[in-house]
Figure 1 (cartoon, helix red, strand yellow):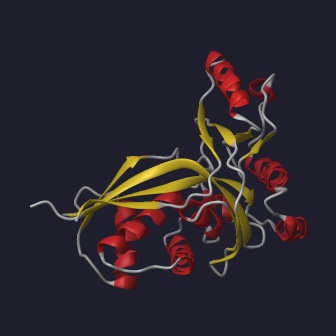
Figure 2 (cartoon, helix red, strand yellow):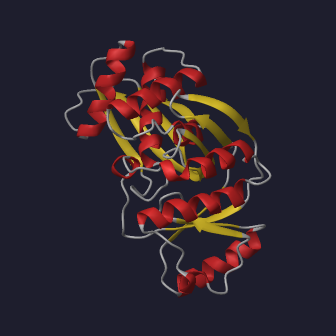
Length: 279
């Protein structure tokens, strides 16, 4: 007999203030979902990292011994698109639903950040990334304490993400010495809000992209109609934000003609969703 099953959809995101420098971060959510299925079943087919997350959750909360986890729709990995936080947050939400555990947003951010550090998915806990994956909007966080400082709604503008075959791993990059940027990042974090986050994200991408070896390719951007463009945190993905859908549609045609890899999406204030497939 088939066991109970839930399906969880989590968000992607754009880095606004990377938490590597002083443990304080900000990210804004993208309506680019990772879809994860969790079902009561033997876990023999699970990815090793998935089982590590499940084992950590069992130690924290108790609950069902065996769960089968399948990623039905993936985000591009190691592109700066919050894929690690999206899968960890999605598994947390699905695990809680199947075990009747009522997790608050505060618990998800605190426990998820601890889990991220313990499993070496992130050097800082990536609370900002996790918040953008499961809560939505512009999320301004204290990553060391695993808590939300402020969450603001944003205009849900059209977005294009330019992707690449190159990859950047967050944990290894996060072990660099960023102390020389502390004053700049303290100022950025104090000032970021829903009215200026695009410009802050561009500055953040300039700093992080320079350190990681990612930059804007001006040949790819030539003659496009975006209002804001920047490296997405450490990269290598690049975000293009638009004032309206017509400008984005024109650029989609141009990018297809140039054979450039991209994803069309938009900013979102919607949080993660949990759907019962079988109770």
